[in-house]
Image (cartoon, rainbow, N blue to C red; front, side, top):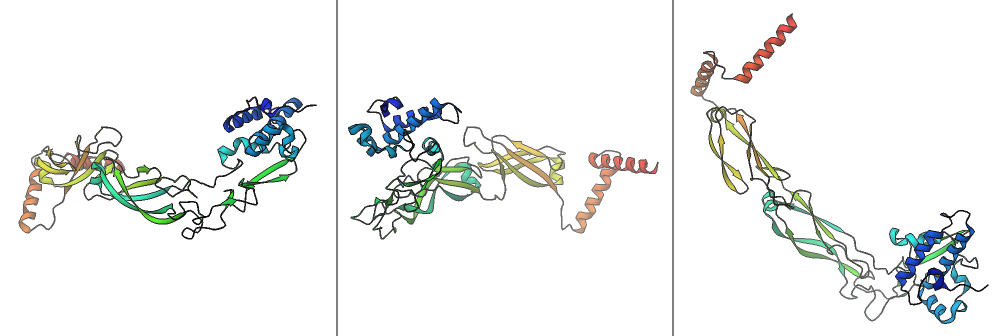
Length: 376
């Protein structure tokens, strides 16, 4: 019985691209895989045909031989378990279909691995974070070797195909019914070996150096926020794509304010005379000074809100508020005259029947009721 054309099996034209071949194989493999069609011998045969066709057409050299000489131009065993029960098995499909997702499959690794991401911790004053600032940082990192331009090979030489894996970057081991594919231990997946490494980078293609970068910190950025600098991380192996640099913001403690999101908080000690009689105070804000009116008979721990005196949100135009909590401060280091006046004042506030200290009077009433209940 004549063998079917590989392009016909995959439903492709002879000028199909590598991506089209892979897409067609994935579609047929998922459709006819034995695990999805238990007991269906026809589906199993379709799966074997699709797999054999893919293993030939996905390899440029085998495809060229097949295009020129047909089935006679390729070794039947290279079909990997197609029509003649070679060395391949159903297990290969996991590497072929899902290799791109999990990073373990594929036929050849370029060796150009993506560089690692870096993190830089940037300490900032609260004022700078609120207003925004351009900051210069110095980051130790790896860069492409200036001698070999990232190839890892000494000038005048180049890398050669790995003799262990034949340049594929992977080696395949047959274990009974399943085929196991592993990273080549000789070239570590790059598919190439460097016989004459660069003297400066020792064949790695990269060298260490300190890089100076300018970071534009946007106004309103908060503690823990990150700024991503694309491509400013570690360089990729042998010219691979570099990683990113993440600048993480850490705000230094402020002597007056504490920040919570877009709002600011401060605490201001006042004398009980100011709280009792009221007055107008000048308080600090990040924009300068502001007036705060204290009403008469204000109690300690009262919180005053100054709208729009907080932080502008880094992602919107909303501006937070400033919350100022006032607390009564007990006077210290009193002289004799001051003590006498305070005692006179205390006697005056307790006499005459007026409730000058409503909280204290309420507490006294509750305390008396509590002890009366215990006695009864």
